[in-house]
Length: 492
Image (cartoon, rainbow, N blue to C red; front, top):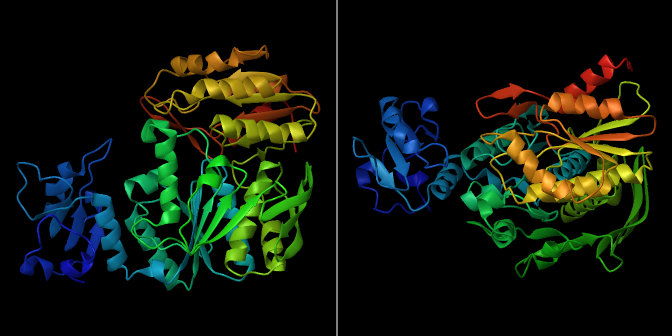
């Protein structure tokens, strides 16, 4: 494929000379270390690294030209193509290079603050119950026609997405379910993707270090439904119980499924039975009702299941297929994941890292009628500071005992982060202690637990690492909890 064909639909600031436009391109890359002979290199200016610094290295490795959204470095000697938006150009180029697979595949995009991962797993399970060969792209890991791949970003760069799409097609796959983060929507990683169904779960305070305001955060999410470099999805699934879900605009011609628990919702849940072993309820829709059974626990998972049911409806699946897919989807890693070593109290690890998510997960614990709820949590460094006291308030208001610890402090002082959370926690008389060492904090919380208590270890969920100022260390809350339980003499 020639450079001119790859740039079809993209707009370089200066036209491509005919000779350059007719130059064959062997591949695309944004990492100079992976450049091969005949590749086109995209040099992004990021918050942590400036790809322009590696432009000459890319040429030395055999790149034909470099694409950037600012002029080349003064010492650059080669072909430089300046564009208005680097990531949008990469998305267009990748789409063209791989033959527009998103226009043949059926893409479902899931966006929102909480519930994206669980909802995506549920949708993928419904698709597989319908006999589809699928890909699942999200926070925890990527699934490609049954193969599990490590996840780099919640939503990968557009080039990586199109590589996955092309490989799924090669393996006979037809359907993709992907978490679409607000960062991906704002930065252009998902630019030009043609979605079949867009799903909105909810919106609460998060990522304001990046988006600055809730309106900016909401506007990024809105792009999934109005179309961003591509037509809007023909189907939209919106949480009508969420104020931002009610505000979410869907263009004329989009078929909208509005779900919730209120009686006037188009698709709603009734006769909800929630217990330690899972959920059971009826889905009520204009086409009739059907029963759902799921091993997932907690009322907030009713919303995730409803979103998956609506997505199944957007594909025309029968109630039986949808119900089977929901029933076959087990607990998602790091989402109220139970750690069982034979102890007579429950230990659950959850990814909750916003005040809303923390309220939800403690609410799940409360719904199981425990003797006490013991919550371990911390707040991430280099992220929105204003949510830290809100998380402290959520833990203090709803828990019986709180252990405040470190999460991923990154470049910040862990004690400074803890002090921010203490401002909220201190508004309640809830017994608590501060232990910056996360391993010791988990040990202290589990040691405190007695029969019929529930210990929630919140914040990191599936993550097998902890990001410190000077290094990243191996640390998995689930393995930490198992280790503590075994040291205390429990055996399954």
